[in-house]
Image (cartoon, rainbow, N blue to C red; front, side):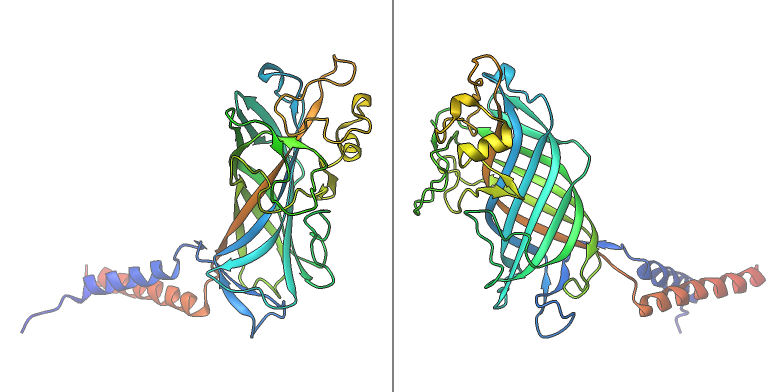
Length: 335
């Protein structure tokens, strides 16, 4: 009869039990999400990504002066983004009567190199906030920019830029900011350079509503395509009049409220070339004009979460360590 050596088997089993119970505590497999916020059935789904619809990105104070040599901004830019949810990955429909939105705000250092405008994280205060609201009484409005912070705050965190950039296509001329082909024209005559870009943001979650998020979240990664087309910056949604409460470049009044008064622009919509890389000067012909940059964004957020060991896993860990201890004592007496 063949003799089976028990010692190596017990060693291997004990080690496997111990290590198996202490498996990695970080995963990208998604979270359990309850759409109605009740913390249980019947509207619980597994979500690996929140697929946000087309929205607005405003990069205030990102350009200054005339020509590439003078267009490195002299201060900090403010990155402001807001969006509504269009669906979930894996595919699941948003339940009737519900809307989910987010707003993001942070400080950044802009740099223009040739046709490339990029933003680096500048630290300081920041936030990512996700809201649940009633889609009949608290519906967002992408023309005015209102309604994105209505309802209940269900998730909040701080945010940093991993990467963010926009590249102008110099072969294409200025075009109307609102190019979705649907009346009315929401850009008030504002024109823009054409191009595309992308961005990635890391979000450190510190608050979540357990009625909605049934899994402990460690972080979210938000991937952003600033524009999807070189020819139509806002080809799907509308350029909003406000983004995260800040006025955009859709009227001279809004421009002056955001970027400072310019007597030479009084009463003339769109004359401040806010989405033009060549910002120019104020009416005195000397003072460099500070410009913002208003972009169409398309976002998705990939959800990560932390595993909390189940009681059974803790028991396996104890069993594994116990077996190792018993075998060590026995082998010590036999030595």
